[in-house]
Image (cartoon, rainbow, N blue to C red; front, side, top):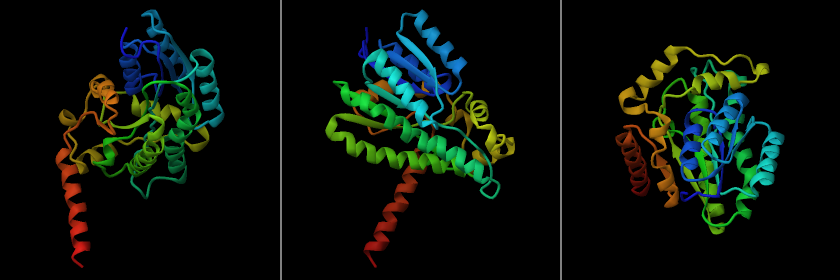
Length: 278
């Protein structure tokens, strides 16, 4: 019986990767789990794995870009558990490509999923957080690329900047209600992210393309090296529950890019100084 015993945690993208690791962390602390993912078979298998270990878990296939499906999932959680104590809006699809190569369909897909999908997820489950008591949290999965952007991934980076902006305001607006909002910034992980992104793209928008040269170019431009920036999902969320307990605003999971963030901050401060002296 851990600190989440009897409490309810909703995780999107829970069929594999970071979402599945989040589910495991909360399950270890006694939480009831609602696992949601566009891959219905995979997320049901994860829920079954947890049920065998005595966790009260259920799964539902969910496309976060579908508002009616989000409401259906929220209704199912309300019926089964009565409310929601933690919402992990773990949303993200990837489409590599130079800016002049990205199509209108690419932008529509990435932004509708990564941005509107997060917004819709919060809108659907916020009423359940409001009726719950005690410490409550919303975790929004952003990306280290917000601090360390690279070429050939403009759509993804733009979408994650938007998630951060939304999350900052959401945190401010929910503070008086005692609902904490934390922004999670994972770096590269050993997951199915590219495969799951490709599978999630609607057929009518055309096939998701992947050219390894784009990945190599991005890594080079952002000075990303696997030994520093790629980890397992389990390692990435090792501090998640502790940071939530402390209502932390930002959660950095891993990656050796602190010097780049400090350099960026120094440029912002320098810009203020130039403004103030003219």
